[in-house]
Image (cartoon, rainbow, N blue to C red; front, side, top):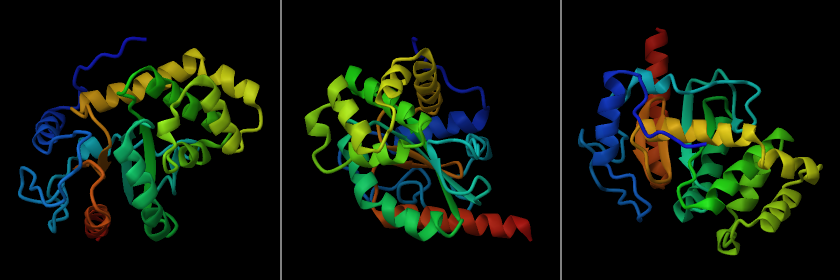
Length: 242
């Protein structure tokens, strides 16, 4: 299925975000944790809880309690959306070095929900890995597959058909025949294309890319960048509830 790269029809906020994403340079290069964004903050994070936040982008959070590609309460006050590729080394760095601490501190406490979006940009094997991850999710093993695929040096082994089956088995997927069928299904292709369409519409063309309650963050930034953004978003939510 061809994927259009037309912007999402969400109004001026999306246009502004697309400019911001261009300014902060969503690239696969090593991110600079000190590089300022358009508003002078670091990687989209700011002491001002409203800075760089777009309500229309926050509305992209699906908050589906049955979504197997999400972790955390559906009604959590903060949603981090991650657009990523299993063949992306910096996505793996975030998965190994940063995400576990965020899960322990914020997801487990009910503050944060993480929603995954497949954004395969490195060719056919990236696309196949994205569909395979979706298929693992159909059997409730997406996050286990995610962990296996992002293990140290895992991407160096590639994501050919046999390797994807091995990762599924490592992730505890019980029915590997169903897994293989699901990964090649039209439903898998549509699901991945929908995620790609969303990302491209925001101007995100490289990985990893993030939104924290509608605030863009570029690349596998240091943990403190995500901590600051999550704390600011949670604080903004408490203020609005008063």
